[in-house]
Length: 125
Image (cartoon, rainbow, N blue to C red; front, top):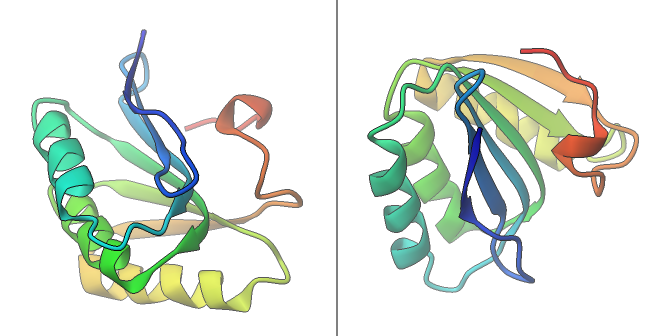
């Protein structure tokens, strides 16, 4: 069973919790000018779930959203799978920085097409 917490828009990511494997998936963009409301709603909703893995596949994220993503990752001790395109060194470096700030274990996965959704990927968690 899956619970969609947010649909993907031009400025917000799709956020889905998979109850079968306790995985939270975040994909798309997070480029909100004022992301506080969006991310606080997501964080409040996921507090009730037992999350084991967070899968992050963002192709754009702004500084304001990064601060909220850190809060989300730091809610609990999780494994984080961070997807990035091989040519996107900035996104890889961001993931490495977040790993240091979060004290969570990150796995970095090169994705040939960051635009593919998680349903198109064969990732076992």
